[in-house]
Amino acid sequence: MFGNDRNAIRQQFISAWKLYRMPGAQLTPLQKMIGDIIAMHPEYHPLFEQEDEKLVESEFGADGGPNPFFHLGMHISLHEQLQTDRPTGIRDIYQRLQKKSPDKHHAEHRMMECLEKSLWEAQTKGVLPDEKAYLECLRRLPGK
Image 1 (cartoon, rainbow, N blue to C red):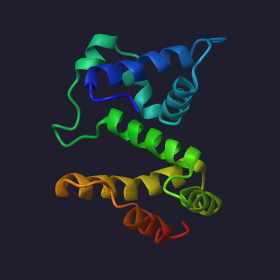
Image 2: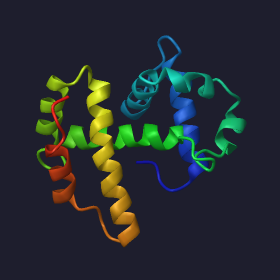
Image 3: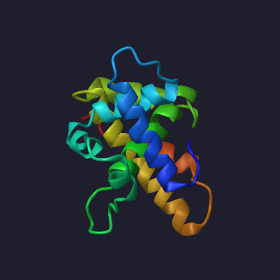
């Protein structure tokens, strides 16, 4: 999505959120996606009101608390998968879950559990994520 430079990635989130909130601003599709995702997370809005430098340099997750950039990045990864239907079939699974969930955001969070598991397993084994296992995890998600 962005590369491996943590500060550059964070800056892209910050910039996209600032633009997203400016009436009439011209956004790229990625900036709009980032803005839409941050908008779904009001708990992160105060965080993104901080000074850019403070937010870029902040450490998250070291104390066991959530890393908002990781969480938002998982949403973006899922959105990209849904746009391309890769792995094949993920869009159908999402549509099924969305119909049985209170809202789109809830369905995404449920799917992100499988995405996180798939990425963690791949990282610990030093291999690429197993798409079949990922899809199977998604298919096993209950309706509500």
